[in-house]
Length: 420
Image (cartoon, rainbow, N blue to C red; front, side):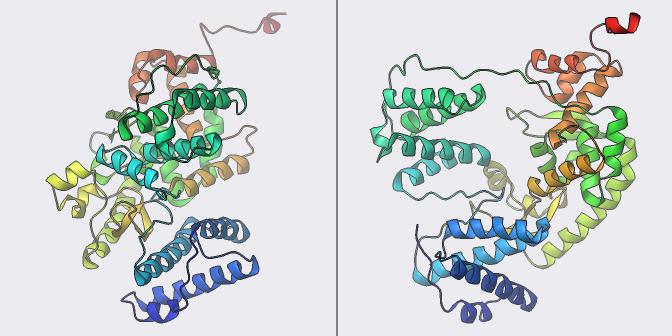
């Protein structure tokens, strides 16, 4: 782990073109971080920075905006230190809040190939995570040493020792086959008959309509609007976070979900009750957008093909994030300082806390809102094929799981105890 030595950071910070209030904020955070490193006898490196953020967030019960402000200061420290010493820049963490640095030559080659093929950022992270775990577990020194028997042993280990879900095992298989065949051109041949992880069927956690009303009564501010929009359209949390201004059709009461699971688009319903609140929210987002234009910031992130074809689209109003972050952050791919959408962690924490405050005797997560959306539609008599389309499920079998948690499953079967 490379330790950063940057004794002149205050001098460099004072000479920077950052606003005065931001320089002072950076000083407070960096002195706090450096003091923490000294007290814990650790160096200034990526791992200690991540540990510090985790510790500080828990110790201060910090809000999302405060955590992002700390991260921004430490990113500046690391990036400026490496620029001063002429070292290769490495991101502290990516826009979804998780580290995504490619340390070894093998990792840089894998990351380069994934970027060339336009894989999603989440896919990049998961593939790299599986690769690192595989190399560590197999004690391999180079990706060129990967053999089919190593892969089989790792898949057996995931199923038998870690008891992972079948989807996790399949993802690991896809990641390692991609690395071997597509990146390093290794012909694996037959992997062999590895132990298959069990495909467990779980009944989803669903709130009743009364519980849903109690839950919403505990949500506040922007998070309340986000949760109601998620429930109203049955959105996945990733789909909710990535909504842009143009995806709202307030005249037709629709939300267009673009690039959902499987890279599929679909149309989701939008409740009339949310129209006025969304118009007010959009006016606040517009103010941030105007500030960014005046500050001459780069436009919001766009997929590479779109950004090449429409070079200024990221600075157009319709492409702005519906839920923009209150702070400017560094794009891990381009290195540009721009406004990203909010991180899902703060939203998910708010959802969890609202479920506790509402006194619900079940574990409420953001996905519970999607489950409840589907179940309530079926209870209201909407046919299952329609619900399948609204959820974006590839197979109706996936949607059928909600039949097991309906208030009146099947044909309204009553317990025999009721007739005694």
